[in-house]
Image (cartoon, rainbow, N blue to C red; front, side, top):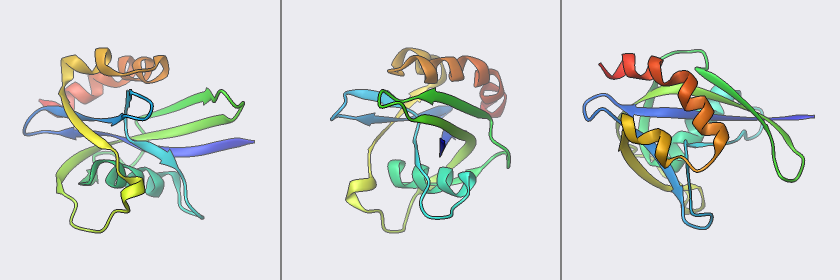
Length: 137
C-alpha cells in the first residue's frame, strides 16, 4: 500500500526566497509536507500542511504537482509525496495548532541545494529548480 502525502515549494517572489522547514528534534531541513487527513485530496493536504508548517498564507502557482517524490521510510512505508509550487501571500491569519507548526526559514535560490538534509529533496530540487527560477524572475 502506498501512503500519499502533499507539500509545497513555497516561494516569495518579492524577496526571491524559498521556504524551508527546520525541525530541531531531528536537526533537519526540508520542504513543508505531510500526511493527508480524512478524505482530503493531495492538493488540499499540500496546501493545509504548508500553511500549518510555515504559518504563511499561500496560493498555488500551478494546479498540477510540480514533482512527485517517491521513497520508502526506514519503517518500510512506501510514500508518494505530491509537491506543488506555491507563492507566499503573507502571514496566515487563521488558527494553527502548536503541534502542527514548524520553524520556517527563508533561503536564497542558490542556497537551497546545500541546506536540504536528505538526498531525495536534493534530487527533486535539481529537477525542478529551472521551473522555480522562471517563477522568480
